[in-house]
Image (cartoon, rainbow, N blue to C red):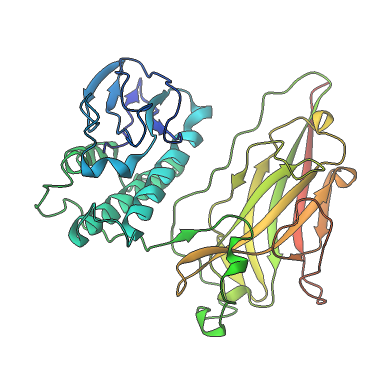
Length: 365
């Protein structure tokens, strides 16, 4: 098990990240890495930390694929570096991905790999990763969690099975959260009213949380149009009761297949009366002219259910290509599960509650 680290290069931020891959992933050698374990059935490799092509440390299988008990935490992650600002969001995303993987290991009830104390330590490491991710997004404010502090976690992660010292930072484990695939939550019992948080209608800002996976605007091309969608707010009768709400944005073709990378917004900034305010820009990752006929842009509203410990899709909305035009647009909300093929749509409510968007078109003439 190894940590995500990033160097500071020429005064600019850049990240050393780990890229996901399934068990048995084809070899994609990072600079200076050794090739073993990633193609051995049953072995979940843990790659080392790389810097300028040199393997500094490794928590992997040692070449013999004995697969120490701790290696399952970092299944299929391998080192890659990003050195330009445009890729910073990828690094932020990877911190969150690793934090989620740690959370899943902490949640596992049928795995003897870690003691409860070790799981608590892994949970605290997940908190630090989210704090670092947040710090990288807040470029104009003082960093809450510095690179130098993150580096201190390397030894702990490498020696998680024997580490018995006090954790170096005063943090609490990230709350256990299960993020379900679209529609999966439909198999669970319906949300109970008491699951909702108190304080409906409050204008208080939500607690700080790691940012989403928003991507930067694509480079302009002559004669081509780029689309920026500002998610302003969503109207819900129980807006004040939603915990850690965020939106997942995807572009699907007529068969419901992804056309662009899926993006998650940060957790909403505030809630007020029957509205949750986002005020966040989404850069659609394909020129408008290149979007396939029949495609649509989907907006899934998600929130956390504390008693059931998972993040659920509450409702969704979509915008078709003929609705792409500069200016404000208000679109209807539909009941879950998300119907990417748009065949069986059911309105969420008869009340005048909608998703409010603002579109901006960028054309390079």
